[in-house]
Amino acid sequence: MNAAAEPAALTTRLTRTVEWGDCDPAGIIFYPTYYRWMDAASWHLFAQAGYDAERMRAEHRSLPLVHAQCDFVRSPRFGDACTVETAVARMGGKSFTVRHRFLRSDDGTELAVGQETRVWCRYEAGPGSPLRGEPLPPALRALLAPQA
Image (cartoon, rainbow, N blue to C red; front, side, top):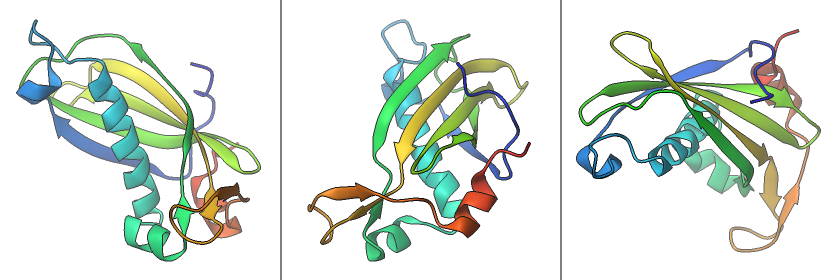
């Protein structure tokens, strides 16, 4: 992971419980679960920053994913509560990298570290039409950008 540098202005935490459907036959988390949780955590971050799904739809905005990766450290099991700590680790002109740390909620054990690169976009003529990348609004950029 190369996006671990500086702390962000806004960090959110989302708690998830490993359900039976999140597990592989060995009873440990199945790796795609981390990717679902990263997606949910990114949208949660933006909702906490004032851009919930309703506002995003009304303003014809989207956050398309252009890259994702995850490093697995330990495997949580069925029933474990996990916390996803999420913050922006890198801010570009139109794109940004969101870093996710997965921790076992009861003892803080690091389970995985992931990141996503997303682009701030607007639909040209509403959902279903082509997307165009745009710079993040200055107030949103200030709220999310890593602090030097």
